[in-house]
Length: 95
Image (cartoon, rainbow, N blue to C red; front, side, top):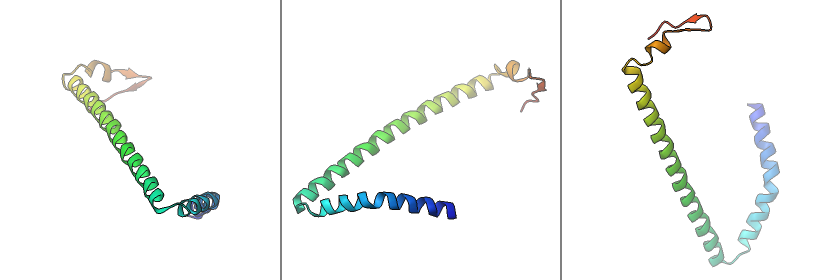
């Protein structure tokens, strides 16, 4: 717990001057310009989330297809000859 707090304090001390500078610059802008900045950040975040979800769904589909192929091959008994072998001096007992 102490190590975690020390790391958090180090990160906070490192980022504090930069965050202060950004916030001072941001609050010095006009209100309409602040709205434009916030809107552009929001659009960037939403697009990033959609890209992340798209890649995650593709990964999930690929893993599901590989699992289905492995299950089919295993359930048909094609792996019995391979899995019942003697690997490096150890005998596989099966499921």
